[in-house]
Image 1 (cartoon, helix red, strand yellow):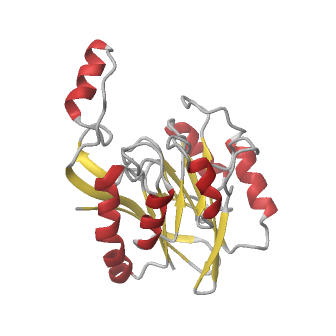
Image 2: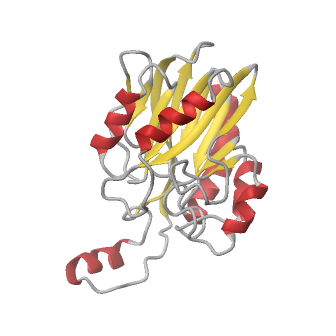
Length: 257
């Protein structure tokens, strides 16, 4: 079986890339599951109900979120309406939304959840390692394989999570930095790992934003508006092939224009 995990969707360019490429990739690659991180799909920060529906209608089976989960006003009231969207699992328990998803394709049950890292990150969250272990234990017997997304800044924290879940998750894939890492690998016990799958959106940019205002901000520290860029739009994602036991057999990074 095959799973495509799409990295941070940034603004309209990223949404357009998903709509343009996901149906074709599903057909050409015989992909069973498509999961996408959509936390930056609304003008580069956050998500709305309308945009969540559009991405699901475009061919995504499920959407995950990150530290910008609550950036768009009203989403905290809308999130519960979506049974194929989950927010980071280690946010405070009082936060709305699902902590994980389990859905079935072709007789295979896939568990999906996201944990936020704690190094160099803003939100105050529970331990991502404890949260991941708890969710795997609580859902034991209810899934055949698991995709664990770690939305984090530090590659060391992401690598640690990969080894921590080696043999217990089908794939541990990272997001947040918007820059893909060249470390696709199958770990010792057949868990697929990549520290960051990259960004889906405009790559003629700085992390999806117009270049000049970002450079200027670095030079003088003055606040500026960072509009979403528009050039060199690509879909970035990682394709994982796995067997009926949920063990990964191949991992491949994709960058599609």
